[in-house]
Image (tube, rainbow, N blue to C red; front, side, top):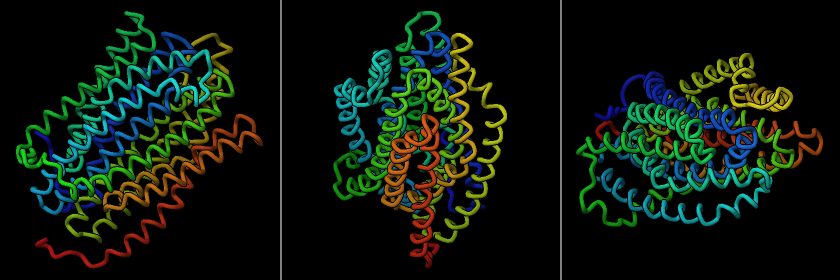
Length: 452
């Protein structure tokens, strides 16, 4: 049974930490199966196949970011209704979110499959790897309905304080993915398509596990009347979901601009950049978990009108996030190079060139990692209290900083300049989010009566 949790009572710091832990473990397993894709392809198919995965990364992330964004936005309203004890509105929100998700998923599937080749050409994907990138993304985009289904179900569970079920789903998906990767790529020799098929099947497993947990929450099940389109409810869901989706989309477009610049430095540089980007997902894991925790914590306590509790939770989470980032940074600086070596195969000279690019990029990100952790935390709490516009503005700033750095710094620093684009984007977003949080929270001084 889903382990739902009321986050309006008890120690804020302890609740946030205990809620974040299973999310972290689940995200680690998710990143591990992404890394296994990369390792198996890099070792079993070759450096060009690894570069093909890298060229597909940001386009894949943009579609994934839109799906996670829209469902994360929906979860804000779920958390607020649950915190307020309004289960009637919660069921109506769930029913209408399902209607919106079906339509949104159909549009994404058509656009993704129909425009894929054009998107890769716009990104100036090198001719020797564009075929591999297209093959991988064709299969990945076919799984859009499954990925969207998992994200919506996981968002519902997280909004109710259940971080364990998404963990179980990710663990199961990771194990399935590893087995199928080895089977499809190393045994059946399906190449890069085999890695994509393994990932889609694994995601289907994770969706089914979350669906089983949601079905056990009988009081959450929408009735027939809850599936009738409710325009005010849909408007509230869209107002929260679209800014988060747009924010993720803008960040991904910025990443694609960076990828476009990276593609111009040749496939050795692309392969090194890809290896670090795969490890970057692991670096970001705890940050994402703190962000999701703060969205749920902020949403439930905003629904209950406990504003000072939100402030206390944010302060406690900020300390935990910074300490976590420092520990991870130190580990990457000390052990990053041998870890990166797991992604790369080929002759000794070629491998050394790829690793030199990868470690230099990893070192820059590691030194500035605390900014990324605070970014996710501040973005999460603002979204949780129902303000999705200011995080979107921070996403636009992140885009501007990333693109400007990617286009300008290589002119003065050569290819090394591209390594600073990501870190500068984090600091740009923080410059918006921290003042935004201070200003927004000034509005909430008088708490609602306990009976509310």
